[in-house]
Image 1: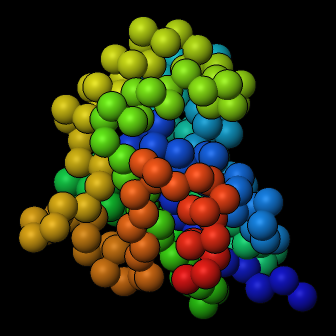
Image 2 (image 1 turned 135 degrees about the horizontal axis):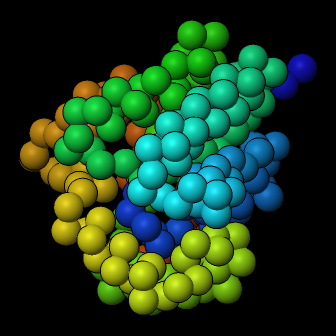
Length: 192
């Protein structure tokens, strides 16, 4: 019988969450649920700035994670998380709750790379194939820069953030993806 586990990969846009997550799944029995699995269909119908998008995106993610936990799925979930946001931390805590409530393991892996590295990765063919909303490269670059300016998407040594209170309750690995291949990152994640 499979024993469920939730692996949350978080970090800024274009840091490699989906790519690393796929490498984890290829090397294990984890299954992938990346953030654009819900974003893309909802974006097409409602646009990302609409209240309907925000409501349904949160609900769909929560329900998929609930069912995965109920069925003992080892799941990789990717997200961009504003660690400075109180509500963001509560949202993430709510997403992992189905695994926690069942006594199943939850781990967080934080991916980081500098802005220039992420901008260079933004137009990668795998990224664009899986994320049609990123194909308008000017808009995608603007989105990355806007998130960089307004969100705190990685932990900051010696600077407490609201998200740190969530991370303190779980195993947390921080990986610089600048010079790591996806397979190398996956090996480090699965070796922890």
